[in-house]
Image (cartoon, rainbow, N blue to C red; front, side, top):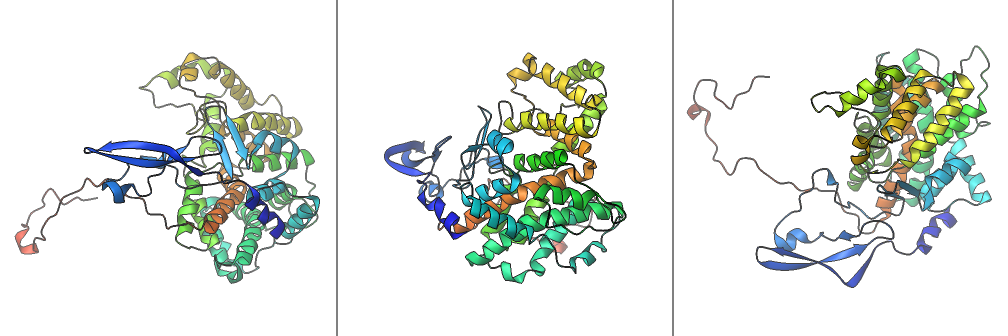
Length: 457
């Protein structure tokens, strides 16, 4: 992989300083010149790395929505235009013509692989899918009704206790080994979490199957009968993995980077990302969208729920519409819509009432001024829940599948951060609004009753 790893060195620097490009800040009667860093695409940024030292002030940005926390060459999003690029390649082209492992290689190394590079990469991933046999014992410690995401957080973090030869972040070879192990083993662990929730025996991976087919086989086959993977469903699963592979500096990716900035081993960093993804505002959005469609029930009920969504006093919200970044149609949503139709046509009724509801709701939302003014366009979660349900997965597995797909994105960002010569441990600052300096009061002088400072919980 050295050849591919070197390819990124040929790319021009995405960020540069122009001598005459300055931002002027006036603060307390003084003027400060701040460098402007120029991106290859997207907004330029104002360099505030030395802002506190020069001004004595911090910048304030809850949620970091206006802050570039790092420099990256991996993924670009233009939310206003509805564009998503992996290393410069449109997501639509990768989903149409490529596959997940090719996308993994692209995200990790910056270029699409040659035929020889692809064969070697596929071989190495395929032959790392087994997990240590002692890991099977870990699952016995969970309650039989444990949430699969709870299991994933634990077992992925536990990988570092089994693979000591790939935890040294300063060793490039160990970083490569850890990369392959996680991309290969996360599907195996995900399938094991699913099987454990069903009380079914674990199914070993097969080297004769492609990545998505192998995962479906581990999830849905049983020892008592032969299971043949449907190629249409395998292609749909692969496409879902591509669509979720990376999404720039979201909450879970930022969590991986922050954990990695301390020097934590890669398995611990990915476990941290899985924990962040578990939040309903992040990885659980597709489940919420599916629940909403089930609540609406039939197309005839849509006008009533549209009216409820517009009522500020009604707690009902249309899930699967709008996005923190996209202010246009989510480019992944159209691909997921087509995938949903393909899967339903293959395994069920293409006139699934939930798909009818979703399609009708989408058409209304794209024409209604209320949604257009607020730029509430359908996002990927709007259709992914329907698709995953049709593939046979329960809602408890939706976020696990998201984590499986996103693992490569997390690893790509972790690798990029580790290789950055300017890497520093993450240390956000705060706007402190608590008590000012106070002197300690001895217990004998604090009174004997329950004061305002005592709170019973």
